[in-house]
Image (cartoon, rainbow, N blue to C red; front, side, top):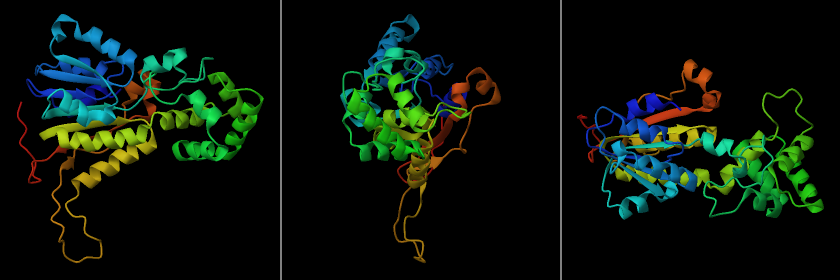
Amino acid sequence: MLLEEAIESLAPRRNGTYIDATFGGGGHTRALLDEPSAVGTVYAIDADADAIDRARALAREPRYQGRLIPVHANFRSLRAIAGMYGMDRADGLLMDLGLSSYQLDEAERGFAFRFDAPLDMRFDRHAGQTAREFVNDRSESDLAAVLWRFGQEPKSRQIAAAIVRARTREPIETTMQLADIVERAVGGRRDRATHPATRTFQSIRIEINAELESLEAALIAAVDLLAPGARLVVISFHSLEDRLVKRFIAAEAATCVCPPAQPICTCDTIPRLRRIGGALKPSKDELDANPRSRSAIMRVAERLAPDGQPVMRGG
């Protein structure tokens, strides 16, 4: 999603080192490696083992051999990954925070309620709590808090109570079970544009994968890792993610953090980023071709020199 815009915003350099922090289906990585500027190396990171299998298959293609490095890890470990691979600096870093089509279309992953499948929703199926464990083990108050915090679900308490009642009769095992419980709790669909369980599924997925905490950790590590003049590109699909990214860039671009009432700046703050453009959304053509991109928002920032000044970008 926003593929051309993302690659253009990264402004790839010849022989540069790039990080695709969320490999997914590999579209962005492939586009980077196919750039006429002849990008040197792309580190393809993903917590999903299936995505890394796709990255390894891509890395075996003759034109990508030696230039694509698959890394099975969550991007929150970006600092440790850089140390493991001896990466001092990156010339650009991309985060595409949406679920890949592979994840949405594979029933057994449990991300979508259009399939009747086991409740899982983990990016890494070998670690962490499953959605099944979450809905069957967490307290009613915890369930309601998660649905409100990550989904702004107005009927979070009713849904949480319905989940607890249902699990006393039998464990909630499948996506369809959970979707039906939510639908009954909110009084049916009532001509809704989206299924009434959409926010519930989204909230649970964000919670069990610690998505916002991981994003914040990755952003902090990214700024430390980017070379002066390098670009950070983040594509988000949720208002909480976008707000976090927007505020992070604004904080790193600030030239003063003194209290507003203080008449003279004494903080000597040196900015580390500068914002490049505003929030970018998919074009009408992309929306027509891929309706799933409707909530995508891209933000771009550039790493400044140690003195807080922009760097003249070369090819």
